[in-house]
Image (cartoon, rainbow, N blue to C red; front, side, top):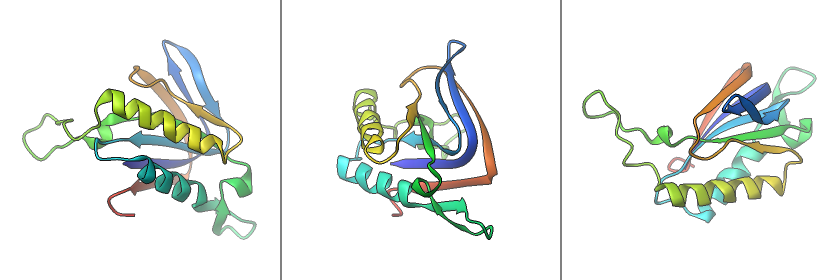
Length: 148
């Protein structure tokens, strides 16, 4: 499982020209799922993501977590995080999770986030989405379950 976490001052996602998810200060997260992922892995990833202290305190140090700043979440499914570019110039997506399994895991992750975060927005699984964000910093972190 992979999370690309971007600290944002605002973010939104559109499908067919309509905003379906919008947040202010918080994280916009691209979520990649592979077939070997489990709910236990998802739990670990969600816990780590929510606990990250990457918001600045009064002294400008990154000491504050999402809940410390009343932050919000926008989660976007992103199978292309599992692109394999080793052979040739056209990426292979064989490492990405089967769509039915990946969607189930994506919805599980959203449900788990809602247990801890007051505002959780999402994209539409499998849709052509247009994501806009203002990356605050910029500050981007990649969490990979293989390295946690």
